[in-house]
Amino acid sequence: IEQADVIVRRFVAFAERITKLYPERELAHLVLCKACIQVAKQNLQHDAEAEAIRDFVRALAEARRAAVIDPQSHAARELVTHLEDKLRRFEVDPESSAPSGP
Image 1 (cartoon, rainbow, N blue to C red):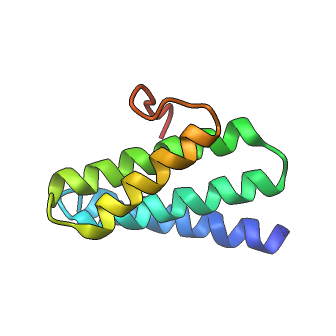
Image 2 (image 1 turned 30 degrees about the vertical axis):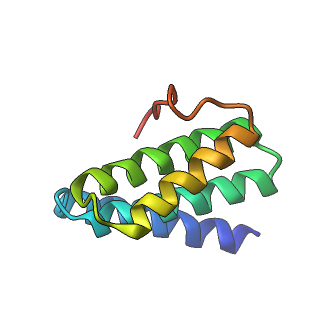
């Protein structure tokens, strides 16, 4: 699990770098969204539900950014729907969720 944590941290760092370099690109935000989902999954494996929810909220924000950049993006719309459903299962209102922190 430690090696998986390292890989996920590197994935997030890579995705954040891409998003900073190409903030206008839908794909950059989708990559960061997927990285945040992986962090959330890692947190769930460590029984850190609050942190996982925070990461799912951040992933949702990135998916929504991607959908705004490219309203025709099927991948972005699908991720938004998936993450909204996931947050509802945690009893979090996705409409009022805002990411906290970077």
